[in-house]
Length: 168
Image (cartoon, rainbow, N blue to C red; front, side, top):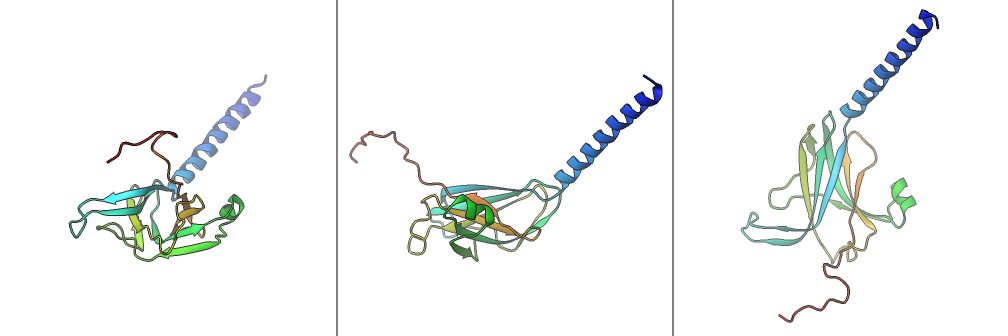
């Protein structure tokens, strides 16, 4: 092989590696929000000094390299996966004040590496079937038109089937 061919192969490898590194840098510097959910949270020793049960707590972490502003927290019902993918909820509920015991308020600027915690009380009088597996929490941010979604799971039985409990 001629030396020109070896130089061309070397240049192609270096150029491809530089392209991949630039793409990775661009990917890591954008806003990347990660959501986690505690569907059965309990607040111990809140503002009033009393425990509060039946809370759903959403934690949002910015794992990217740019800041964004969280604008709203919603509960959305999707009847099937196609509607969830298209973000076409059959029911939607807006949570204007997701503060419980000093947790976050909205709007909130979320810097890289920081987290925001919002909470919502379970309201069976408003949403009686929120734990039936068709609802999601949605977090809207300024950098994106679509919400970040996290599924609200069905409650799991903590005992194996057929287990009898002791009388209390």
